[in-house]
Length: 130
Image 1: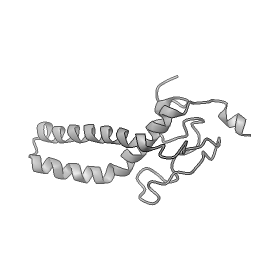
Image 2: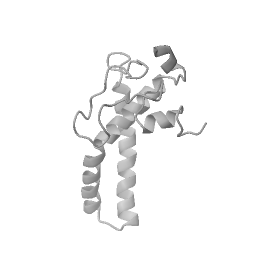
Image 3: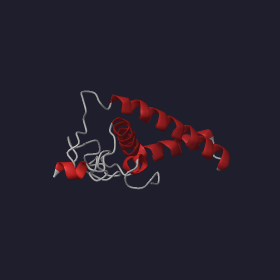
């Protein structure tokens, strides 16, 4: 089984799928939709897995988001300055533009990683729900 094939954590995380069945969507809208950007259903529509495992469950996702965003920003500005020979000011302006476009995607990625850390894949989850 490959790292990005169905049934793997990589598939579930990057496609924003239910970590238990890899079928149901974690979010109702697309990643670059600004309508209901942060809304998640309570349960997976396919297997019934609860997406909110307790009060404040996604608090840990905040730390993951902080780490991912921090390293992305450092890498982006370094790339702009050293590879594209931009000034510091221009690099940061471009960073603001890119981060405005990718903010929702980073938020969703962090939540997807966090729930995948806590919920195990079960290939029989769809059969159990029937």
